[in-house]
Image (cartoon, rainbow, N blue to C red; front, top):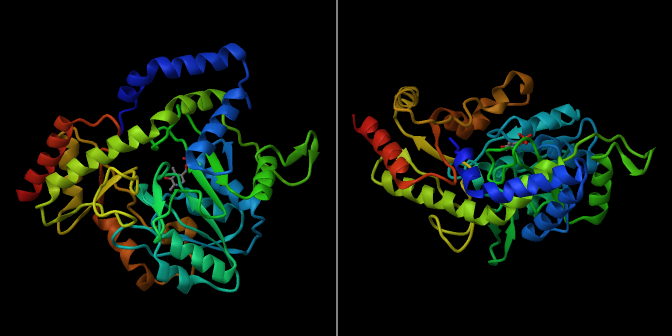
Length: 379
Ligand SMILES: *Cc1c(COP(=O)(O)O)cnc(C)c1O
């Protein structure tokens, strides 16, 4: 699904030098590299504060702790996402309220969010799934009307742009009160281990969060709040700092691959290619409205299990993200859920298939993957 070795070979000298520098200075924890990366990411994103942390799951958890959410507070999020999003809500003893998503972009459905609001609702967590933003303008409007916090799960959309109706563009993850991202190796900006970060434009919240990531300390050995130990290793920061200048180029390579996949499948009726809904029609070069963390097709009337098996026999990796909706996962069952409210996720889990997507995909590989799929479908 990804080609981390191919990508490393191209940037070996920069990455090795950057890692070597950390080893020579032995500043393994909170070293200058972490600070340097933080500053560079702040300027790339156009956000006032980046707080690096240990992984994307921690980033979400710490964001919620920073906002002071309390047990029993209801937090609305998408039913169709990676479990980490709902896991941290439950872990903090907040009440997850899962809602359906849209058919076109697989992102949280605005009408479903509105319907799920109760007097206990305190926050909305939109997930920018597969590389494009949820409808943030509508979400921010709802949040304002009901006095709710917005925490963006930006683990799959770093570098993506969001376009407001007035044409203004901002980076994904910098719109809500706080954003969280992951630097897991296979993400669009990945390190060589675990890593994550929290973004915010709110000075007070940034201060609170900086203490939380470091055992609730604002002054050495004074613990004002309950915190955690969640740090980005200096060595991981060194990798990320070497890769950040290439993020736009990487995202462009993903878009190019997506465009080629789209072209190959455009006449195949049983394949629905991913739709870009924010900003542009199709895939454009002028902005990054979709950065294709995943290239996910919807299959109509195709035996998905048989296709997965066929692809595996041909040596083509693929993935099903996600095969079970969160509202039907044992850990997150809730009496309030009604199957009739999850028609889209219930369908998506049966239809989706994600194809290899990374920065090193070449034309020959795309040709082989697409022709294998088309031959299978045409029998
Ligand atoms: C990867 C991911 C996370 C978690 O990130 P980790 O760094 O693996 O903890 C959270 N949410 C979504 C949507 C993700 O894809």
